[in-house]
Image (cartoon, rainbow, N blue to C red; front, side, top):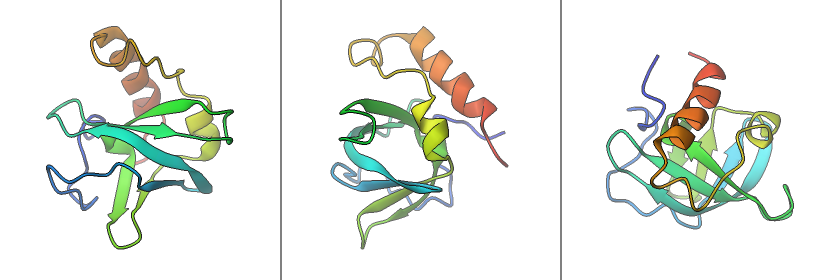
Length: 116
């Protein structure tokens, strides 16, 4: 299994590129827009503002869930359904940066959902 916290080589991500504001598409529809992201090696992720879809919540998506980035349309496609994303561990703004346990919990959840 590939590293869930790294962009897939085929995703089309360019290191240092800004993805903030890009729309995020699950396999079955739109889930929101990128609020912020990181391309730190071994810890790359997207924080997605889901707007009204999950009552204004944010979700943390490991970079390994990204299947394709379309810079022309400013869209990011992820290999997860809306239900899988909605059922993920709740995003904790204060914990996600320095809490290895939280990252591990999210990584295990999305890693378990991984489709090769």
